[in-house]
Length: 529
Image: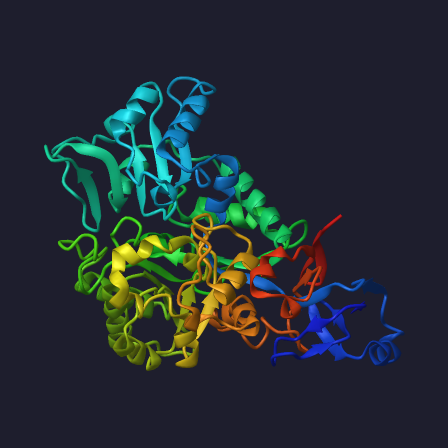
């Protein structure tokens, strides 16, 4: 048995509730309470003691929506996310190209024209000027768009006559020439031309990501990676190899993209199967794109593009058929839906294809919800998987996309919680920063990174509500709130330990806390030196 004491330990069962100490055994919490009382009761069995030395313990933070391998790739690749202009991006590409042998792909992640003073999209001819010897694939911050140079397009067989695929857009100029800008499903045209990654590459990316997440206090994450790296078996195996439950412990819950569900069947695997640390999850579906590239599906057109409603990745019939495929396997679904048009289509499909077990469906992002749509969601057994940091990164440019009137029904986390709708908190890393404290701060403070202004102050969450997104909310998303997300007897011994009390901080200070220890399955997997 292990005794943990010497600091505040928040149970997160009720707001403000904390205990002095806990006892753990075999990866579970045995008892919580007063230090002296627990010591007196269990002193014959306690073989290890951990003094928190004034630090503050919380239930282990879990990111409810991210891309684990993608986060590892961001740590390995050319990071464009902090660059402030197209010229800065081009300069970084030029320097990178000079270091690579001819023919090797230049892969960059995270460019975001909304944080540039000149919000233009880089043209393929500019990329061609940098290098004609290297194919280029540069992913936008939202991962719903990419830029490619002519070399990459040639390898992909994309030309003026290539039609837009269902659910995707090849952006063209006034002469109908492709500009090198690809939205949503059209990205696959370029990605399929890239060389297949190796198993060693996947293991390295996974290992880097998990170690980085540990350092930010994350004990687990719900990830979607299984459709992008050479097939289900190869990608799934990389998780099993890295997160082995011995050298590395992390609770990875892996959504199954509908594109690999038959491969999962062939491996005689299915929902909630796997190991104690790598578990298969719901069927993942994309129903629309993103606001940044104006491909999120809206009921009314974009305020700054009146001819455009966004993109439906699937027809209504196609979406309904995917729900049926999930239900045949007794699986819930986890559907990416940002715009109100997409959320309504998903809600209708879920209502028409109800689950017949106690599991929950989830809608990921759900950023634009009218009062009528919220009422519809209240009738469904779902969790909304929200990303609080989108408030910090999307404002003020998102006002141009949506207009002030529709904005009242957008990013409305407080309204959702008050309506009794369960919500979980994620980062969508590598699209946003992995640090859960940034999400907690954004939910409480609602301050934009761009201009430091507060937006929709009426939608601010309390600190308790914000932390709950990453503890109880993430547990509810996978129907495990009876063993994860709180510090109670019988719950998993997964903890996040910070150097200060989040409940005692001002809202803008919440991300200033530092992780001192991360504990998974009773083992310390990260400790700040």
